[in-house]
Length: 96
Image (cartoon, rainbow, N blue to C red; front, side):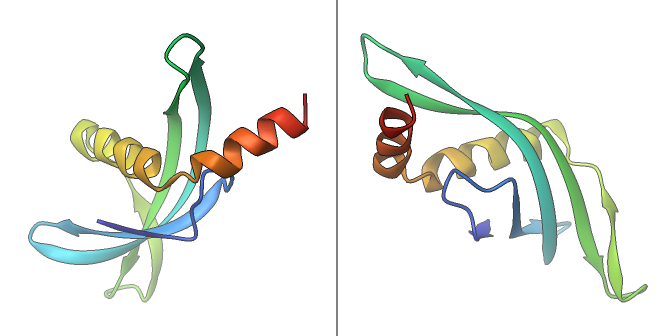
């Protein structure tokens, strides 16, 4: 999986992942929130919903795609890994 244009602030981004053994391109609009655990000083990205469209060679446009539960979980983990937590922490402290 490869995500383009996501740092933890964007609601819209693109990603690629394998579907049925073939790499596919996707556009995603995500609703998420960040959970902060004070004693551990830990941030966690929680993906609430994701509207996903997959590029279709057949139709030569993006078509709606439903993520499987495993794909949804994986997308959440990839988003967590790509979030720029230092910048997010600064943003949260600056906007308090």
